[in-house]
Image (cartoon, rainbow, N blue to C red; front, side, top):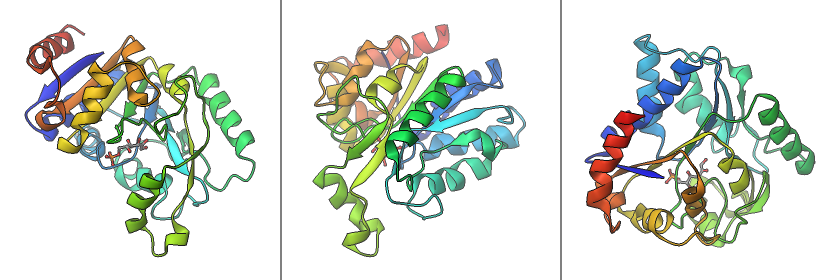
Length: 258
Ligand code: F6R
């Protein structure tokens, strides 16, 4: 695991975008794993700028997203499919039929998740997985207590997550209580991991993931066992790391050597 510490989130987003762009340049048909949430938006903007400047093309790229609310149609403005269309897919030249997001309306969720994992496998596996991190250390919707060997499945959201999401919905009854999510085991199979973390409210999660023990209580800590995982943090998110001064220069040197 390498930790890249930047002064600002814009700087970190640019460096992370460069790693994604390098993956796409190396293999224009690569398979990307993508995340939603506020954190990757800046990085997606950088990638859209690269496409506009004709530095890269996503024409042959295939993507699979981490998660989707169960019970929401992809056309719902709070669905993750909608988020991806607006914040990335409509801004780049990817072929929409090569983009995959779990179907939140799948009644037979067992069949849906099985088909999703099988499709990733058929595509050759994920080359690079983009991740955010929850303030409790979750990755995708693998809330504390999720098995570190978990696969794509239906998950129950924590009362805190349900409460946090209530502001995005008109009525409390509309707030999803379940999601379909890749498991920690699924994520760990990606060849490269690019995790972004910004802001002071992520400092405890980053500390737990990087310097805490490996535990299902902080599912991002499983990434300590990944051989090519990169954390791109701003100074606020890295503030509680004991070895932050060391990571600050080592990370950039490792990045240059890559
Ligand atoms: C999103 C996802 C989540 C988020 C995490 C952080 O697809 O899987 O794990 O990455 O909740 O969310 P933000 O970036 O909004 O702080």
